[in-house]
Length: 372
Ligand SMILES: [Fe+2]
Image (cartoon, rainbow, N blue to C red; front, side):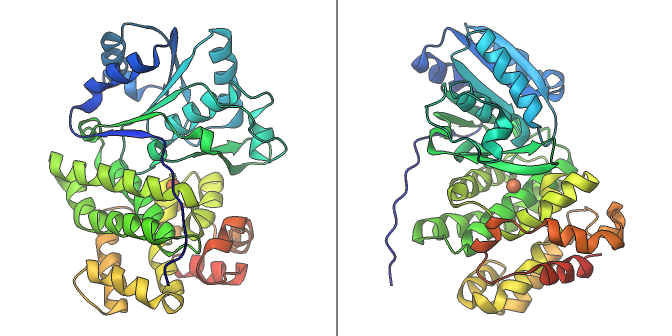
C-alpha cells in the first residue's frame, strides 16, 4: 500500500566543496541592512571562518559569539534582544548544531513576542514569520541546516526541548564539506553518530513515508561506509559523503526523532555527554529492541552491511561504531548506576510514541543497563 504524503522543503540547499563563496550571492538576494552572525564562543574565530565571512560580505555585521554547547533559552533571549536592538534583518547561523539552532530560534523569535522558554514549553505558539535565516554548518551531523526545528535547553527545568514551525526552515543552507575538514576525530565521530541516529530514527519512525524512508536509508548507507574513514583520514571525499548524509538525515528530521534522542537528553543534561555521543550510545540496543517490529526495514539496514541476516547486520553496525574510538559504556562516562531508573523515567517524552514498538521505562532501564 502506498500511503498518502506531502512534503515541502523551502530551503535552497547549496552543496559542495568551496561553496562558502556562494554565501555572498545568497545574502545579496536577501539584501539586508544589517546581518546578525551567530556562532559558538571561539572556534569559528580561531579557524578564521568568521573573518573570512566578514571580508566576503560587504555588509554591516553584528557578531553574537556567545552560544554554548546545548544552548540555553537565556542565551537565545540575549541574542534576540541584541538582534532587535541592532535592527538586524538577516541571521546567519555558523557552526555546529548549537550555533545553528540558536541562530534559527533567534531569527524566528525576533519577530514573535515572548521569552524562548514560553515557546519551548508550548505556552506560546509562533504566529509570525521570522527574519530571514541562512545556515552554514561546519560539522556533519546535526542536520539543522535542512530542518524546521531547534533544540534549546530550558535552563530552569533543565530539559532539552524543541521549538518547531515551518517558518523556521532556513532560506538558504550552504553545505560546504571543506568547513568540516578541521574537525578532530572525536567531533567527527560524535557528530556522525548524531546523523546516524537521525537517519535510523526517521527511517523506522511511525511517521515515515516513502520519501523519508528513501532519504533516510541513503543517509544510513553513506554513514556506514564513510564515518570510520572520515574519522581516520582527512580526505575530502569522506567529508563530502558525511555532509551529504547529515543534510539528507536533516531533511528527514521534518518528522522528528524518537527513541535514541529521547534517551540521550537526560544523559547530556546530567552528565554532559555530547549530544551525538549520547544518542550513539543506545543505537545498537534500540536496533535490537525494535528488530522484531520492523523486520523488513531491519533487513534493508542489514543489506547495507553486506548481509541479509538482521542480527549479523546489527553486529556489523556494532563493530563500525566500536571502531570509532569513543567510550561506549555508561560506566566509562561517569554515569552512576543508581541513576538508571531516574534516567529511564526522564527519557519518557511524547516523541517515543513515534518508535515503531511501544517502549516503557522498564525497557529503557534494560537498554541502559545493557550498555553500562
Ligand atoms: Fe540530534
